[in-house]
Structures are given as C-alpha cells and as structure tokens.
Length: 221
Image (cartoon, rainbow, N blue to C red; front, side, top):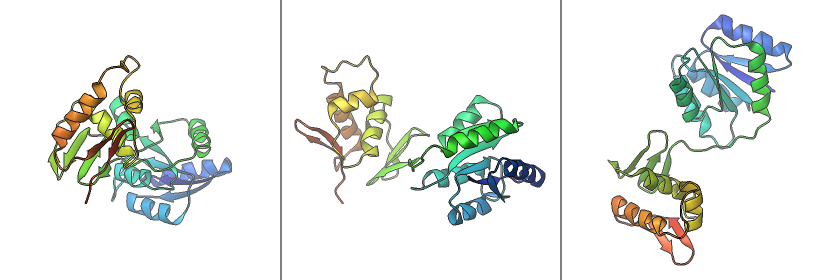
C-alpha cells in the first residue's frame, strides 16, 4: 500500500510515516496542500491521510480536487475538531473516512487497510448540464447564474436526472430514488413535480418527456 500523509506538523508527520513503515505501508509526506496535489499528480497513491487545516491550499479544497478525479486515491481526513458538523462537512466535500485528533494509531492502520480494499471513482461534487448547475452540498440550483428556488422533492428529482444526463429515467425509477417507501406508485406526483421543475427552470425546456418511457435531461446548444 502507498499512502500520502498531508500534515504540516513535521514531528507528527514523521511519527506517522515511521509507524506506517513498521506496518509495511509505504508513506510519503506533503507539508501543505499545494505539495499534496502535486504529489497526487505524480504518484498513484492508495490512500491520502489528509489533515484538514493545512497551509497554502486548505485541506477542504485538496479533498474536493481529489474527489473529482476519475481515478483517485481514497481520502481519510484528520482534524482537531470534534463536532458532528465538522465530520459531516468533511464527508460532504468528498472524504471517504474521518478521524479526529488525537487518535489511536492502530485505528488509523485498520481504516487505511479498509479503504485500500475499496474501489473509488469520481462522483462530482457539483453537477452541470448545459447552463444548469446543481450543488448537492449547498442545496443550490442556478441557471445562467441565477438562483432557482426548488422544493426538496423538486431538487431530489433534478439531481437524479442530472446524474444521468441524456439517459431515460422512468417515473417508477424516480419514485424509487427521490421518494420514500410510502410514495403511492399510482399517483401523478412525478408528473406534477416534473411540470413544476420545467416551469421554474424556464426555457429552453431542460427536461423532456418520452411518452410511455420516462424523462431525460437534455439542453440543446
């Protein structure tokens, strides 16, 4: 396993590298965010151990950049913040795991091995189709740079469609992916929601209906 330790405290970084080498884990060190991104460009790491509060390029931005790559290492984020919101924020920007300082070294090793066994591919943190932009973390939608106010259900349906642009998504699939188990499959709730989305997003209509098949997200140039 090849690991990149991104930590601006030299003593801690060296201690982590020495400990990992005893576990037969090869580890490199980057002391700031810019160096970390350069290292990830050059070496196919399995896991990046990323301190959140690092200089030059903040750890959050480093995490976002890595998370958007088509082939990428896993990211385990380290932070001194113990609040639930800090953990939620770290995972929301693309971290695959989270540890608060101080932590027990055997736990870090166990988490590294667990992450290294999992395949990772990019999941964009912001979705864009044509001139429509959807940010799941901020729960914001804009078109041509203008904010579009959507209900939670309208947002959920739009996100499903934007994650598979030009694919045809049936009403049944939208019910499964955007509604809970209590949704009535015999209602016209999907049709009503799509209609509201079209009206709010405006012309040219970004959502097309394929009669008897479903809906697709497409914006003509």
